[in-house]
Image 1 (tube, rainbow, N blue to C red):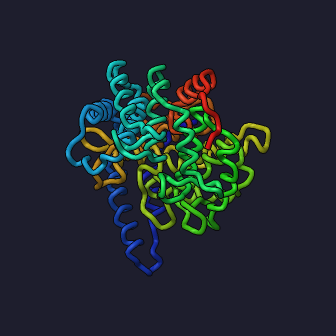
Image 2 (cartoon, helix red, strand yellow):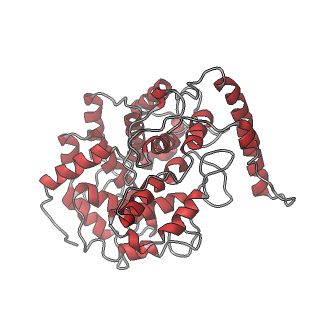
Length: 405
């Protein structure tokens, strides 16, 4: 595929038109487009002199990620209940950049995650905290990325399965924690956890697919629960869950594809999370990862490889690399925002999807060849071979207890 960037004149022609009825929402959209157009105009001038632009600042990102793994600034104290998430986001980002920590640090990380494992099953966000499906998903993914016997064996899968039963409702939905809200994130986390660790049973997820389909909205995307607004993160959770359950025929894939396509912003090149919202780097993954999943679904239905690219890969890469890199390392939501670990992880994940997630054998890289990241599995946001390794390890080592509520 030809490595061709959009021209500034073409981008300007896509600018937002409020049609003479300005609102707070339209004013915000005009403001961000104005900022990004200035960045693109400056970039186009530089790129005319250096054909390898834009450039991903890999060393800066790796350096700040490793610093974050060793210790976080005080501003992260508010995320004390999300420490397993922080570990997952950092490790996954470093894996994407092909710069993983050494074995000693990874072993130390396994020991820390083990301290977050609750005696009743699952993982809390930190040592001694109550288990939560989100932090359990993050812990399992982090341990899968580490991928050692020590990491795999640290998971108490018998108590983990019991925990999943305690947060399951009779309608097939899942609460994020005991007494917590039931939404599509809980279902996705539970399914992903169960599939990777080989504690999945049909009984545990009875009616779950039907509950998830009830979250698909008139727009085509998925909401957090039935009757709410479609949202990029929820849409990913819904689609990935149905794919993991092999029940995608239940949803309206065409409507979902139409909704996802319309979330890519014409000027920015990145994705918004909802209709009439601003671009955000993290949706590079939440929205972008839907396309390889949908391509796989359509290929299965037609019994031949679908090679159509449903989104503008080049525009997404251009947005991420020119607009979402922070000085000194780390990635951001949009120009003017501060860097953080969450956006670093999911924006890099989206960049990988834009490079590799088309179903085509050859990667499509905008800018320097060194911009290429490692691949991600679009259903789990972990490397494909690391998902395979974990699944097959747990198949060879089945848990002692099966399907007891």
